[in-house]
Figure 1 (cartoon, one colour):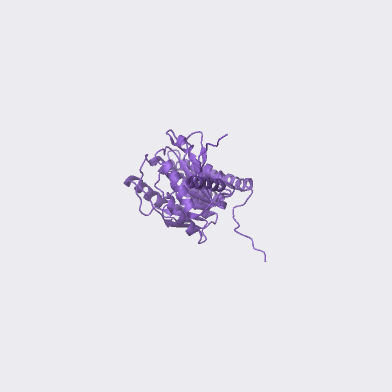
Figure 2: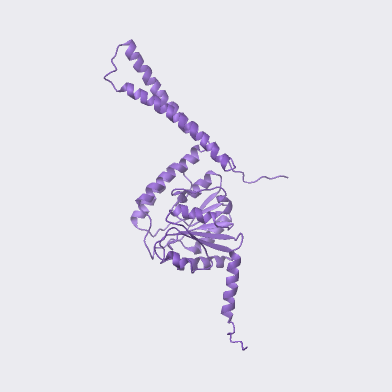
Length: 337
């Protein structure tokens, strides 16, 4: 039978070599995992994938790309299924950006994890800058959108959130809202994300003793789609910021917060009760028409409740660490000579 196949061109052979290289890159423990959550980014996702591939190949690193579709209702899912190389995670519905990041972290294998948004405002070409900074001994490097290309309302909300964050947790970062970050794999060994916690991952890791750095990165105007940021996310972020503050200050000793507060409130109630007792029985002051006895009882009961909350929180914290097979400290290394 006559062979009718066409001779292979050099470009086709190069494409096959790249394909084989990409298959290798998707193997065990690549150098980089690029994790990107997506929600209705049909206009951006194809170009984003191409730019990530080009950036990683230019670095000469083995890599995998992990896209997480967080319940998109446009053609994001359909387009992603045509892209390669790609590990594509589809969530059953919208769970939020933090949940998407957590799913990406738990299903990636790279020695260094790069995160970014799916709207093309982060520049994949900046990955090399993050890696160069990590070579200085950092475990986490966060991008700083020094020249932001967002609307005034979004920048104003971020400025307020940054002021509150510096007061509560002071993680040493100028721009916690920038998704372009690089993490060593061990950062996620026992890190679970909830709420809107993805903004405060560096803060949570700094509490555990990881070294956190920051560098300026590029920021581009959004070309396609609409921003997913609104005032509700800002409120949720502040609530989660308070949670991080608690873990930073009192995760090891919640009884010191609630117990001390409880003793203080109980003490005030006890003093007020003693004063009222003296007025009643020493000076014959009528209490039936006064509110102070109710205030005294309220303070006494509130103090007792706060102290009990502290005991329960202390038990819960100890149970948490035992359930995770660890303690409230991290050992960086053990050297034996």
